Amino acid sequence: MSTLAKYKPVIDEYGLDDPTISYSVDILNNKIPAGKKMKQACTRQMDDLLAVVTGTETTYTYNQELAERIVEFATLLKDVTSGQPFKPSLYQKFMLAMMVAWRVNDEDNGARFKTIFISMARTNGKTQLLATYGLFLFLFGQPKVNRQIAVASIDIQHTTNLYKYMTFNWEELSKGAFKKLNKKLGIEFNRNEMRIPKNRVTLKKLSAQGSPADSDHYTIGIVDEYHLLGYGQKEFVNSMTSGMINNEQAQMVYISTAGTNPNGSPMYEDYVRFSKGLEEKSLSDRVLFLVWEQDDVSEMYETDSWIKANPLMEIPKLKKALVQGMLAERDEKLSSGSQAEFIVKNMNMWQNAKENRYLDLETVNSAITDRPISMFGRDVFIGYDFSQVSDDTSLSFVFPYKEDDQEKFYIYQHSFVPTAQVKDIQSKEKRDSIPYRQAEDSGFATIATNRYGLIDGDQVFDWLMHFIEDNELKVQGFLYDQWQSDSFIRRLDAIKNEILIIPVRQGIKSLNEPTKFLQEEFIKGNITIANDPVMQAGLSNAVLVADNNGVKIDKNKATQKIDCVDATINAFYEGMFYFTEFTNVDEKNTKSVFGNMTNEEISDHFLNDFSF
Figure 1 (cartoon, helix red, strand yellow):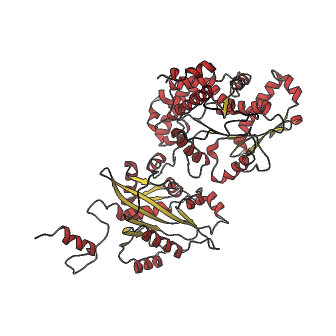
Figure 2 (cartoon, one colour):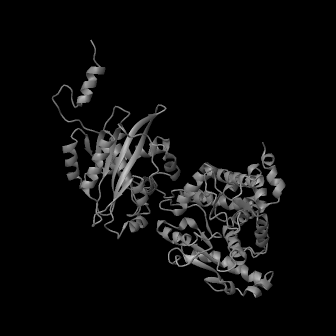
Figure 3 (cartoon, one colour):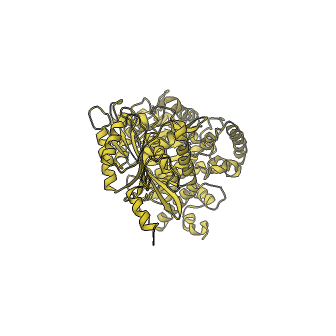
């Protein structure tokens, strides 16, 4: 069934001129090339409208008059960059209508979408769109009195651009089409705030790094350049949203291009969560998720596909200029080895953009599984990386397994997190950009609880013993960095003397082979990991350093934790040989005819390799 045939009741009801329908139909009929997420978003829109038309959706309604009104309003504005009248493109009309036209079907006529997430490549007019949306609701939004609108970003400098778009356009409107309205409302504005005093309506600019937001109850919150906010700015965002809970008109809008550092990024966390919801058709009815992005990094060489991340290319004149500029940008970045920056900014795809990165973000993400193997009774190699004051102490468990005759490894890690050099775990999370409390709740971390904030070696040891015994693990080797590990190793040898304990020198000569092996197995798709924020952060933070002896991992900053990856590479020092006949272990001299065979291996020798 064609798109037009399936959605004929929608088209009959609203018409093809509706901004959301015209764009959605062009996307779904491939008239406008689009990425996977935009096709899903347009399918969702048309399905929602169909549900309204057929009466199966009664909670929400689509107010076509509001959709038309905001598009009409946009045409009254000026394009700030050119000073010419703003002529919204098809995609811009679609987006504006989607944001305001969906309402709750009750007497309050509240906004359906409480959270609006929008992302596209740079230079696609997102600031102009935000200015249109924010100014429209400042002038005509609900409730009629006591509306508070905030525009925010990482700092005042970034917020100022959006705010200037609004004040510039209001100045133009107040001298022209809205001269009468200005006289009626008595609108005032300065460098930081716009006001309608008689209705107690305000629009102010905020900085995530310095503006308190918890004293106000915002009707509309706009966060521009969302990717710039880190874990430390989560509280700022939460302070804005907390005052919106009981406000049916409230909306939080997050808009940005993708970023170069996913660690601790609220935008990246939202992107992953909402992407999964859109894919599985489980996205909340109160979330609008619109992402224009390329489907694959290989598309950096396919100029005709660039409209997927750059929707303004639907306009032929703009497409020509954008393609020429992007070609120059791509070639420059390729020549300098900085192609990740082009992929992020111009293709709108999240990347780990460190030039000496150990693994690409896409490679790490592809290893995450929702269905980890059962660890019970399995062979395992355990890696250990010890710290006490600042870095984490990590235990990494490498489980070899086969899937469809393919040799693979599942990695599970558990980190012990000190707080000695910070005042509390919240400060530690902000500094390291890792949600340790979330990791602890999910079984991937233990946060120090003693009054010194130090890691308790006895606690680490007891946790390890319980984990081995509860899961009846068959430990093939315990591999460790010798630094300050003597006491731990002596206890382990005394209690579990059957375990092969192997010290791993931390120089490049020793670590080169397991470091490269782990990297290659990730790239080949032979590694699986849990959805563990500590491990994901460690893999993203890890960079390669090299000398004549090879490579090993390191970090660019002290706060970028890689301890669990260090522990994992220790485990692979021996674990990489599991499916081979090789080993890194020097056998001890022995006079026994059985060499260094274990009792179990001697038994197997007679049971399996011997007959009359």
